[in-house]
Image (cartoon, rainbow, N blue to C red; front, side, top):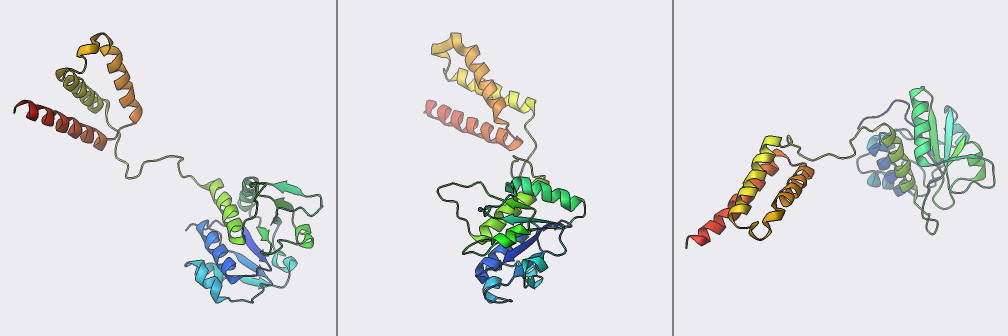
Length: 250
């Protein structure tokens, strides 16, 4: 896993369940986040239940730091975001996870440290905690059911952070081979035309044969066939014509 320099710190404020801490650590490592800070975890620290849920994200848990207050946990950071759905009647800059991720990447590139606050499972962040933040991150969700758990929130924001710099193509083919050449496509198409003609496919619609062939050719061009696809189609044609001729010889 690639870990970005000055990646955001994840700060869990008064987390109540070790399982959620472990699941959050796992989500963090999925996206290259390793700096985990805990503020007054209810069941103390370390926590065996967190280890069980971390699914080999042990390094994140092993390096987790514990603090007595949010102020202490964020003292060395330059920028703080509060993940909450409730602004608590205060005037705050509110951003989506994607917008926050873009800003966090800029901070990272400028060698500025940032962090994201997540509140406890039962009630989220307090007004005092939110006051320490520069902005609020609110996730657009179904208004009729907008509740997500702690680890889901960490996963969602970690994903957006990672996506900003990810260069994975929007679409690709597994085990990709070289594309079929135009010569291979032409040979396949000509063979199809020959076999269709030989077997009387065009007999009752001869005037439309040029249009049908043009549409077929365009169809095959749209497929984006690979080298192995051409071989497969050639095998199919051979199989079909072999069965046809074998029956006619009996």
